[in-house]
Image 1 (cartoon, rainbow, N blue to C red):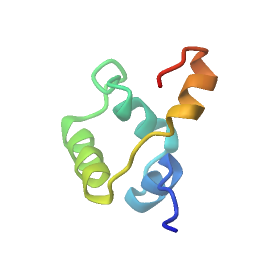
Image 2 (cartoon, rainbow, N blue to C red):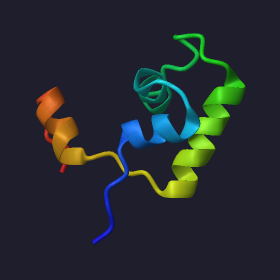
Image 3 (spheres, one colour):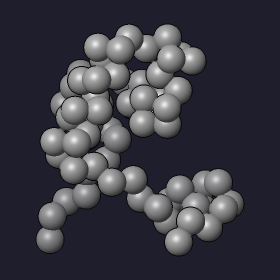
Image 4 (tube, helix red, strand yellow):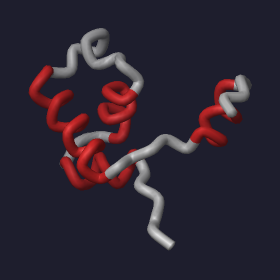
Length: 67
């Protein structure tokens, strides 16, 4: 079974913080003044590795079921 890709794995591979990756994945890059170049780099890497957020974890955090 393949290991699940985590935000921390993405951050470590790109040499940036987990918080920065989270902001980019949650469409808050412009609001947090993250450069378009870095945003593109993260999104390209996410696409390349096939990152998928854990929907169960997200629903537990937000309290909204997303199934």
